[in-house]
Length: 241
Image (cartoon, rainbow, N blue to C red; front, side, top):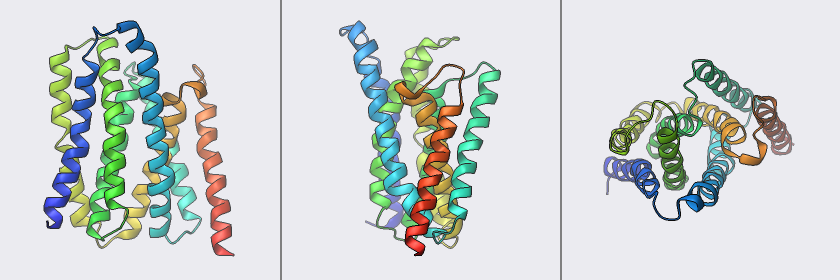
């Protein structure tokens, strides 16, 4: 199986988890109260755990390696968190805040780009990254569907699932951009991974982790990003010693 076929297969499977999660969320008549409370919170927690694993196990280690473990990785990571913070605040002021849907799009696109670049340079972590993307897209599709159904203006199940199906090709298209363009620019690939990591961590603590969210308070999630940066600095010091 050549690289092109591999990229198409991995990214299509990862992207297909979005409408699959939405289709599962369509089942609303089976113990609806339990589904609304227990299952939804469990799925949110699972999605947050997968996102955190992707950040800690793949995106940050690989991204730091491609930028040679310099303290630049901390700056890029922090910029990613601040950028996602600003983006979410703009969406909130325009009353278009849909955190689960926003998180799904904002991590799927840069991760697919990084995935294509990882396959292009033959990174051993590329298949693992693809698995993480699929695992997180499933609960994100589930939660995004429930969110879009509950947030005015409400859309029909058919329209939401149809839109989610249109998102599936974004994965292969974005991955091919990374495959063609990032194969000779590993520093940029690492920067994209770190930038996405900072944004994902912000979204985890702001919108996904139920216990850390405080209504109309945005300091805690930014604090989490800064705290992770401190850990990265410590890791850099250990590696450099």
